[in-house]
Length: 254
Image (cartoon, rainbow, N blue to C red; front, side, top):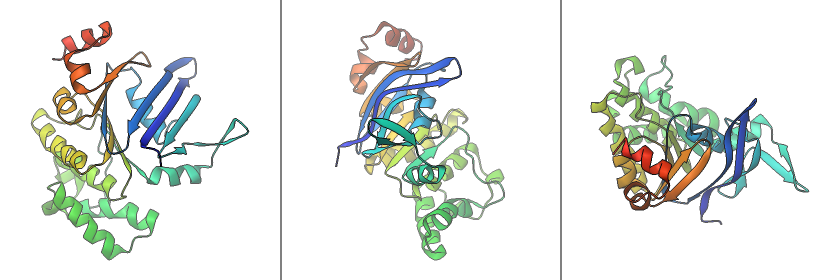
């Protein structure tokens, strides 16, 4: 078993004439947290969407837990897998978006149990018991029977995290999970993410929260213009950046 959870090799991605990813190499070791930072439009969210095959890579190879994502390789050629097989691959990858994407017509607990029951065939009583444990963990058990419209943004995002974890993923992707939140609600979501990291969950996080990156990340990766310009420990990248573009970006934030 490889010690890499994500191994992206020379990934390119184009939308028509626009090349968004220009040969990305990215390795995320199992049980670690990698934070992707950089200006808007640098390709960070696109990488995340390629990891769970919401976007198809245009070139290169992308492995999660040793498995080629989105394609099968035969005689050096890549063949796209069926949507059904892609959905199976996605089962092991949890994703939390900027917008909370909860089902508005379902209660909090119904949101959390739906995928384990429908996708994995977990018995309802078991799914419900596990959902209550997870809601307790994210501080939302008292809202189990509430509807999303009755929750604050921070509460909805914590439910979204519980919903993703309910599928028992081996990898969690976070796409700027706090960017749509009022500043005073950011901390409660970051607390839940810290606890996930402490439990050993492998995480790839697109974030503007430099304090979180400094405190929780094992690796910080700076992207700009569709390429990785710098990668290293939080101390190396945030405190002692080598690339002029990284220095310029951080000088406006820190």
